Image (cartoon, rainbow, N blue to C red; front, side, top):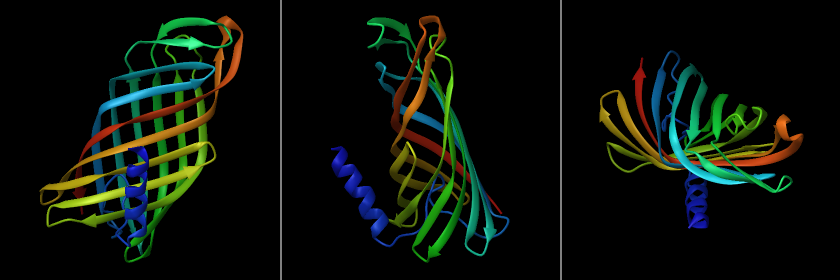
Length: 228
């Protein structure tokens, strides 16, 4: 199933369609601003490496702001917070299981450039802070990332969109549909996965200093509003 989804994302990107990211259709007109806010459904938090555990989402939100700069350029800021339900996490070194929860705080800033009428590229900086409640000290991973974005209009109201970005120890992909609900407003639904590898994992109480990989995935629902 994952291979089919990845193939669909790749197909959208290679099909010669219009730029997307967060807000599915980027407006590069100077002074145009798109604001979006929402959350996730059926989301999961997964840790693997020194500590192994997975849990569904308990609470969280996402937001984004994209501003057109003119001449096929735009700038974007995204952020969000996530907290999982309590779950049992097992440490291989300690041979010990603890009940805890996962937390993630995400921020990124991107520059978007339309490289042809149908394709845009994105490059920027992504940062994520992770912790397992009070058990593990918060750890931050940051990296440059880059990729491509695409969309394909289905009719006057619905648009398919996809995005793929990667960098050192970070990977993100997303595919979904945007539906126009008013003149300057859309409701966007997508499925995406975000991975971070080799994140510091420190538990001072147990003299534990290792590395951890994280994966966050789920269905994102966002409302977006355009301001001109």
